[in-house]
Image 1 (cartoon, one colour):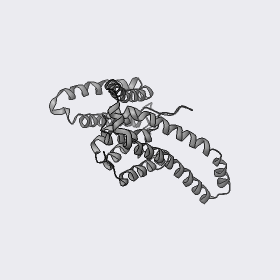
Image 2 (cartoon, helix red, strand yellow; image 1 turned 90 degrees about the horizontal axis):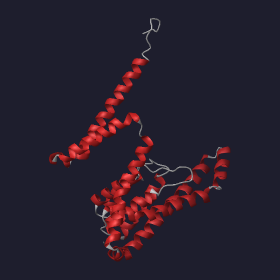
Image 3 (tube, rainbow, N blue to C red; image 1 turned 135 degrees about the horizontal axis):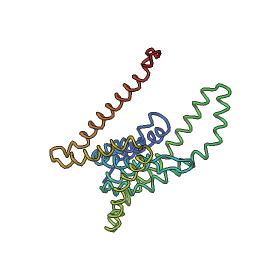
Image 4 (cartoon, rainbow, N blue to C red; image 1 turned 180 degrees about the vertical axis):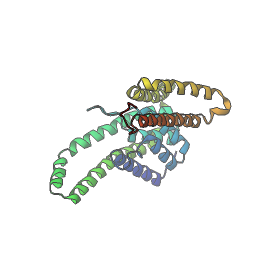
Length: 265
């Protein structure tokens, strides 16, 4: 696929903003489901970008840093997966698996940046002691700009290099390796969701989980409901969550109604 300078520049800008958003701004724009759709729109294939972004989002949904262990970076991984799928016409699962090394490289960049930036914390402290708000703002802007540039440069370099050799490289991938990447990419979303369930599941949640699993299979088996399946399940899930919220609120209200306790009621 041929891309223009404007498209490359727009991907650079999106990466720059998403990198900063991962730690500041809304802390939601950097999510793969958002960047995938935006990059897909830039490259002329919103549908593929959204599918890849959603697939990558499911993989990262349970990822979280624990101490010094850091998961693959969601910004670079999600954007590179969308770039691969939209420009090289990769299968979404293959694109997700192929983007993992780039996501790891991005995380190494973040770790290196934070390590190098550590001495600047003393400058932040001095500004805070002296109530120098302009100094704090200036140092913050400099730090965030450097972080955004690191991400944007990495993505742009691999984007441009991928356009030069990408299609030949994709064609050279053996069928067995391509099938393996597709299987790995398809499995990652389930692993990510399983990690999330391991963290948040307790005895009270299992009933809702099993109910949702059973309802999903029933809805999926009905042809007329198969296409809006996700929307239907989202509405059912919201209804159950809202009902549970109301029940919990009413029970707490009944327990602390402020009544006269002299008669034991």
